[in-house]
Image (cartoon, rainbow, N blue to C red):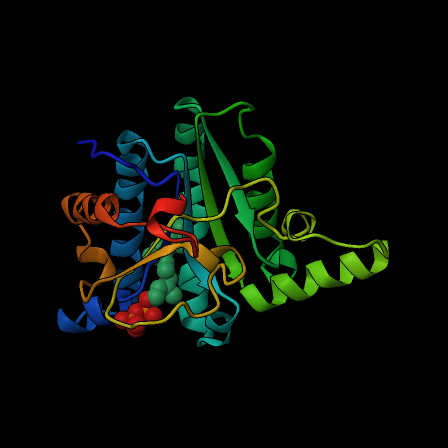
Length: 232
Ligand code: FPP
């Protein structure tokens, strides 16, 4: 399904895997597995809908403080996801990017992520961006240090190019599942003018149809970027 006025760049904060599992008396790891499967479905749906960039919040910097067992499970899922799916994305002419601080990840996971990015097709018609050990404040601080090192006068545009997301347009639409009403350090510079969409639905239950309803709602939003109606 395609709706009018499709956002070029969509971000998703994929929250609620743990509660989805708890409701079913399952271990949290199975909630993350269900989340991963849903993520795979949504990547296809986003591409079919005409979205050009999809940023997925897989792991925040804060998530790295979770118990070792849960983190090991998430790293295993990442290994599995990259082994099983990245080539399928390339075959569909989709690019893979990874944003975040990869330096503290297990070395084999880090390597898979870097290779996943480096082997991506050029001139792809869709780009999936995985935010992993990502934090918006750390990203801004890192860009600020690079700007200071360069020592030149800096514009917003130049500063944006120093972020992990350099070269990627700002998100137009950010969806958060799982009922919380906040951005939790996700793309906080880039989200300045993004439309926000919050739903109580837990991520593994966020179906393709619900994603399309969210896009439908976006198509009715009136984005003024601080200007008045006639001024656009
Ligand atoms: C937040 O839910 C979700 C995460 C910390 C992980 C998000 C990851 C996925 C959706 C899929 C994983 C995909 C790969 C490739 C690893 P939560 O656990 O905080 O849920 P809760 O708030 O209900 O406890």
